[in-house]
Length: 262
Image (cartoon, rainbow, N blue to C red; front, side, top):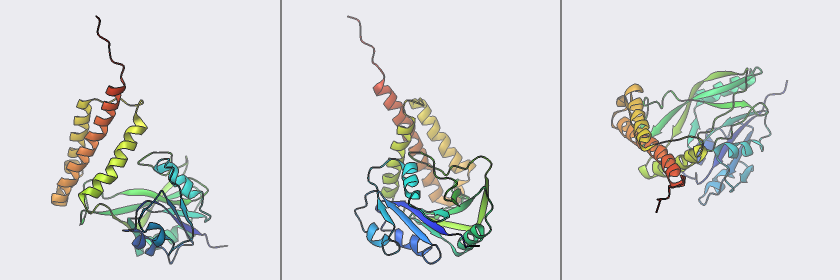
């Protein structure tokens, strides 16, 4: 039997800071690297082309889910492993991936446990660890959904999700302005996706923010992550509040105003 082929796929924009380390963690043992860029103006393309000639561009941004679908359409390998530019595959995870595709059984998709470093500290609690994400599957069997943001792989009915050994190292925000820049895009997409379909109020925005803080810091034991856990809980609560406040304001502004009787 022929050895199954494996592609790594990424969607990127201005990822020169992280991309080389990511690709170096997979370059020597995968068959194909596919990268879809959404309009970088840094050295992203230059770095990417050191590892692959399958570099494509789509600046007509359709949302995260559909951008990933487009990237997957360029994949020719039997299996696809999805990565973000700020992630790195560990040796243990590499071995687990290779074993999985070599012994693959029909109707299986594979999930990976991410280990995140934020603001210079590894986060072991706060709802960030464990962090299981479906990232490996047969290319022709499924793909990401259409989500504008917080997209996820569609697990077809009857399929089994298999957990892989080893961790996927995730190096997220280092500076607060990075967090603000990224979450701004996510917040807008979240509200865009729900506008006209979901109602919100200022009270519900405050309650959602409060519950988010309590969940991360108390229920998910963010306090064990020290000051970083407190910071992340506050930031996440603020992000949650802002999302619902934005949804409420859109509804308020667009609601027909009553005219006063003369």
